[in-house]
Length: 281
Image 1 (spheres, rainbow, N blue to C red):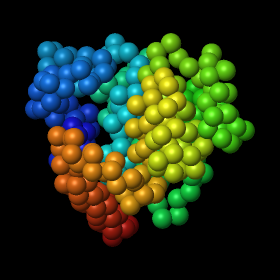
Image 2 (tube, rainbow, N blue to C red):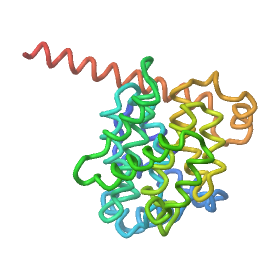
Image 3 (cartoon, rainbow, N blue to C red):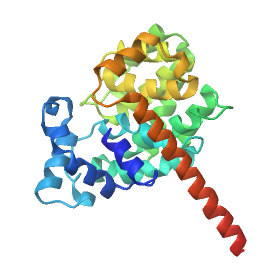
Image 4 (cartoon, helix red, strand yellow):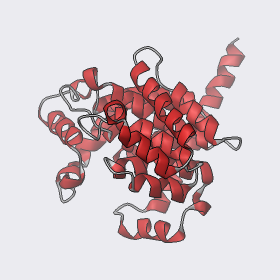
């Protein structure tokens, strides 16, 4: 919600400075009753922002996690159908939580944002979405994440069924699992592979991920976001939709509409800038 708010305020062009400002303005949303819901990387950044750090430096020393990738869906939404732009954006915004020796977490956020943006295309397929996610990652600095995604997808293609895929991943833990299970190098490849196994189906993607083990809620959140962008609201189980409306503190329908309007505003602004550029030429 805090990321969505930063994007809405800036017509979809938010930076880590904009996001940090929203954090500070909504301090109780992090350190109030929900403090136990936020992971250490987020809490550490927030405290440093409040005490002494500028946003560019606040993530120094943070542990690896999937905190930035897990919440990055709004970036994919406001960059709908433009996966390259959606991928570039998290390399700035995710650095509020992950930089330096854990910057591979930025790669993970870029992959998820690009997948969501690509999934909105009317011509999207499971393969085109996965290709967008993999290509989103910077090829040199992000080669470790790219290789792990390719490896996980290779296992998924060979296994073809969920149970076999899960068994093969668990049998090769030294390659696919990390010492900290929330490490993006573990969760992102598995998320994309489960999306493939589920053939992009929302219910299967979320259910398979939720039953995978390890950092299951994170994997299900990211996989579900991609699948919903791909299949659309009407394909979500109605009881899931109603539960989200009932238990969340933010009006989900209002949030969706505001993000959609932000996406349109960003598209219009870029289209206008393109016309201006062409007129100069």
